[in-house]
Length: 487
Image (cartoon, rainbow, N blue to C red; front, side, top):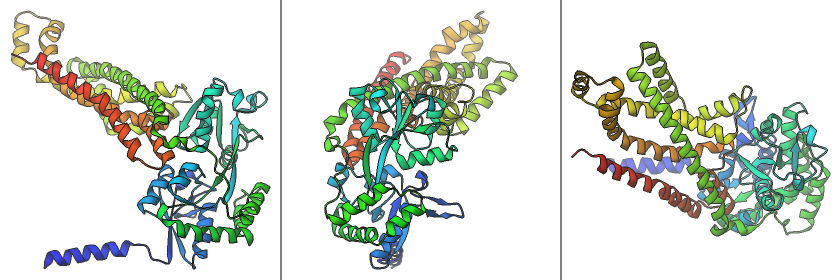
């Protein structure tokens, strides 16, 4: 009886969480900021932006509904809408063939231009992608701009640099870490205003055109048609134009887009290529990213071993002041997030020393894991029975001889298994370095998954590659343990 009542309570609770038919639940990413979606400074629990107002207009047009916002990472909008986390995705969602093939996509309601931003001294020399041979060009990952840069890589020789946000690319452009940024004109203009209109210039000639759309689950094609009807009406009665003018994003190209959409039931041809949905097309990129992951991990582990040995030696053999310093380092590094350390080394130290992203990634991972390695080595050294050390001293061995002949070999056997575990963990933690523009395996997989609209195949490929890198290491460690095991 109690179990039945508990089940009834659970079902009632779940039912209470379902959105009302009078509510349109829509998803977007407030981290992207204005003018799309941002937290309202007057009330941070609310959001504002032109996509917020577009969502409200759509909700009213669907029988007087109320719009309710759900926060979701921009790259996960497609997957979340198919899961049913919300009904409509709006947040500068780009119109692509892959998205149209996998989801119910609305008609385009805004036209954007992919524009290049460069430093003022380069404005006279750079006019397009063809002038960026050998240069580093930044953009957001899993976007039309990123696809354009990857396509141009083979023909122009430029180097695409992927970011997880649209703020740091422009900061790195001003700092000289990248030579250009390719993004939507709205994002570029917002970044320029944020810097007081200086630091970089936006080239007037667009690289390409694209459109923002709403995305619904594939099964919601009927609702999508109703949303299209609301958007067309908003174009006719001037509601959309008023919204865009309020957010200072209206220009003549929007009026031309509205005329085309209203006159025709067909939507504008999306920009891009559907070839990205095939796994074979992504294998070279995944292979390169796996190589980056492996190289970062090996170099970081080598640095971690050196740092760990130095710290462990200081804690075991050093004077009191050195033991205190090494203990403080270990506790501070282990007590703060690796992600924070990455940001401090890459961005925080930029005013003192401007480290390349790859070097910053190796340093952050190596210094972080060095603290953990130090504890492994210290524990292994102290695990050697003291009676053996006293016997060696009685025989006249120096401390260096004791370490080399007695303590070190035994400590190595004790430390081998946890060292292997640390390397496998570091291999996976290397995924964090994508936040400072290093495109490793997980980041490339996320770009692949976003472009094809599914994590099934990309996730399986990524897991297989990680297993292919980690399993041989674990097997080697077991063989070494067996070889060095005392008889």
